[in-house]
View (cartoon, rainbow, N blue to C red):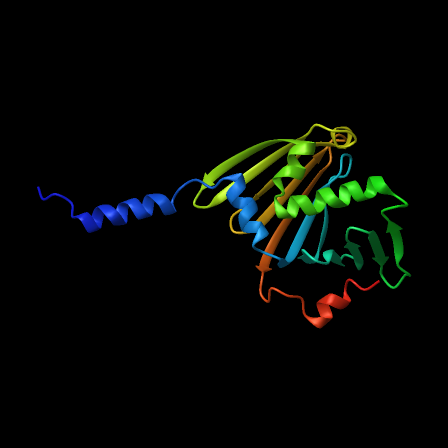
Length: 204
């Protein structure tokens, strides 16, 4: 039997390096390199006592410098804009409802946490949750979060994030026995800066 060539051994070593396990630190670095993410979302909410789940869908834009823009388009129009200073909610053609960080600091703790979920911010997540990160193989990963601080531990049983290159799924289980499953698709990171129209979404 011929001995394997040096070049073949090197290729095997390189393949082994490229197939190494995904880690939470590596995931955070990957997300940090995505200053802008655009995506479509489908949300399914299961409520105790209601036989059929509630469905909604829309578009998401998260930009490091601007915040989070979340627009539900079905079954009715609802827009949420979150940044470090305020939250704006617009239902249909109604006037915007604005909540400031000074007026409702608890709301902005959730705001900060929500953005940490999308960015896999380990420091923020570890302050609020017990983390269990799992490499599922083929670059797939799962991050299970169990709340350990109040009021999160009074509201949620667990929050599970999963994906590959991007965050693809969020599953929230709450203390009332309800569940919310969100699936993201058609993620885009280009262009890395917002267009004029996208910037206007944050002007409220």
